[in-house]
Length: 231
Image (cartoon, rainbow, N blue to C red; front, side):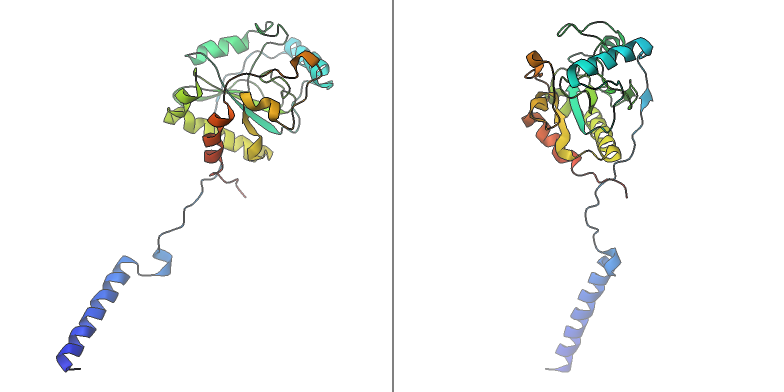
């Protein structure tokens, strides 16, 4: 090969190497693999509903009747149940849960409630201590946290980035904190298929609601699966 040709070839190689090193100079500068977000505690606003001695006694009596558990405490939770409020505002849902009267469906005490409500703008409100049972899902109150989302359909919530994101962050944090399996994050409509479902009142053993069906929960569980639990 002629000297001129050799020189041209060496120049081309040098340019190519220089371009590559300028773009990707070391292994440490290579594009990083996708990093899964860690499930940290989200911002939570405390808005407790009244849950004094009377309501705790009612919850204890409810637990005895429905689960054979003589206690109002929520111990070793294994399930997270997602709900939507069928209201347009946080205030309407809060008022329903704060009012300790027999519910309009089953006519029992204590009044219905959930541990959390996630508003349309993504604000997370905690209504009840995580150590107390709350009446939100027949057959599962003894072992489940309830998360309500302001809205009338699952589709509404899935299409609100702030609210949907807050629901995912809250659920991921609870799941990791209490070691709850992803498969046990369910929609209310999936309650009867939970291995933890138990109900001593025969007439209520097939009772459930239409909110958050299996199809609606599938993308939610997929998104929850992207989060990793901290060390």
